[in-house]
Length: 251
Ligand SMILES: O=C(CO)COP(=O)(O)O
Image 1 (cartoon, rainbow, N blue to C red):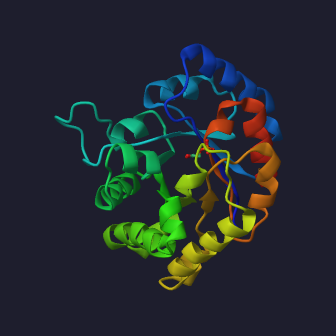
Image 2 (image 1 turned 45 degrees about the horizontal axis):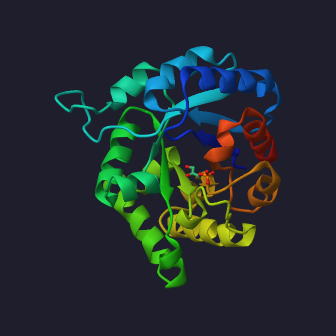
């Protein structure tokens, strides 16, 4: 049995005041989470603030990106894995479609970052997903397969024991249009099947989150699908009540 995992991707949102209020709301309900792993991923500058404000160790903290360079050095503006580790980050979101589309991150760079995170024992949350155009033109599976292959080529299938995958159809992110539970399940099954072709035991264990307009009212049905093991939550993770409700739906 896979333990579900829900993570909040706060993206570039928040201030000290709004984050304190959000974390206070999470603290108040953290004992109601149930059998689910939970993490929040604030903007990097707030990681330590969130870590110190969280009163429950039921909620872990993750980052939204990391430098591809394995050790610190002359890389202005970057944050190394060692620095994330120094602040007890357990997870790092990698290959989010916003980083791929807006900042031009390539499959190869994402794969390198996954490798660097694994070396530091930080669990990568590897995001994959297709655009609406790719879905409608029938290349969805090949797009997702090549996003996975880029990482498989660099770290190998065995490393997927320590990787979380997040399937995030780009057309569902921040749009209010959620993939239907059946649409999401189809892709999750495809991803697990692809990994099973390489190592069935690892495929059976790997956590595959769904992300894209998950809300309290659609979470339960999505998370009820056989291959959906929780979610990567954007907008709804900025509201403590909504995020806790989504976590409970997974647990
Ligand atoms: O991109 C996402 C999480 O990484 C999903 O964002 P929304 O939940 O706001 O659609």
